[in-house]
Image (cartoon, rainbow, N blue to C red; front, side):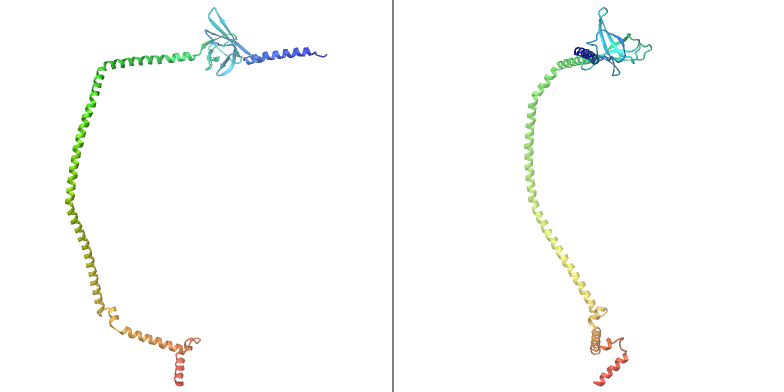
Length: 317
């Protein structure tokens, strides 16, 4: 059995519509494959809360707003909540309507310490979180009170300024006379400076006269310094004379015969002995030149043999 093209197109369209519906509801937060329990919360004003807004527990999404209806007879709004079945709620659980900074609405669940467990389609306790406007109103109240107290203090200060206006006028009058006093002070200062300049001139004249008086004294100091220099030369000459006297005394001691140096200078015994020594050395050298065998022979020669050879030479001569 063959399926016609028209049947195939029809099945394709049905499947596409089903998938589109499931996908659209999934984007809205509806999960067809998870079990959820419905609860209700009642508010006086939901502030644009819409179906598919999220329900959070401790920052985790556990459900969504499935429906929002108005009860005109009682003047309230009934909100239907679909919450995951694993979340257990009790008689002390609270559903708080909240909004973030961008204005997105949501429901914040607070479980609390409950005694009795809620059944499906029971009503939760509801409350509304404080918005920015409420926060500003609460914050603005003490600011307004402080502003009023500040204005009262400012009024008191202005009243005091008004009472003291006469004193201010007197102060301004004194300020007007101040330039004259300043001019008078400047005149006195100029006269004092003139007197000081005259005194300085007089002191300068006295100093000049004192310098003229001191010049002869300075000349005397110069003469005294020259004398001191001459005294130093005389002292040097006296030291030289003392040194020459000591040298003469030493020479006198050398000229006397009671010491070794004087004996060397006055006696000829050292000269005679030196001459004898030189003569002996000369005869030794002559004998060495004439008879080198006496000194260079192996093991040398005895004294007797040398004398015999000398006597033999004399007889031959």
